[in-house]
Length: 125
Image (tube, rainbow, N blue to C red; front, side):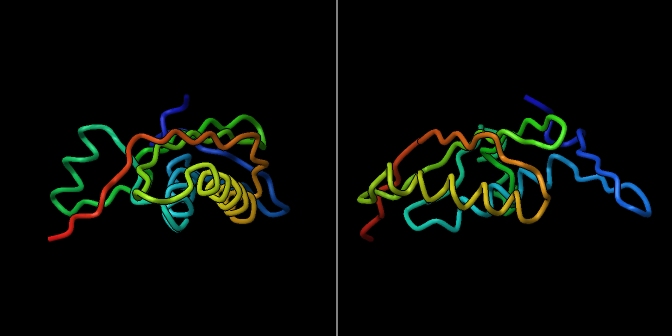
């Protein structure tokens, strides 16, 4: 996997070069996945969870990207809401993430792998 903070994707246009940081691709994937009904949140490590408790929002939490030439592979870890059809929601996540990355960056999406890290049960306080 690539380091999301430092690697970039470069493309040549008629008047110069365009660089897209992997962090941008990760953020697009995280935001797109979070918009799917049934997805509670992106899952992250302890550092990301701790940052979230202090109000720091990491849009690429739970996302790893691997960019090769003009294509990308995305690995997502998500927490689902209890009661939703997991295979259906995951298919929607895969489709929405691939479409968003392709339309916003021009990268061809090779794969969107989804790992369910947890299921969140709503509190009835």
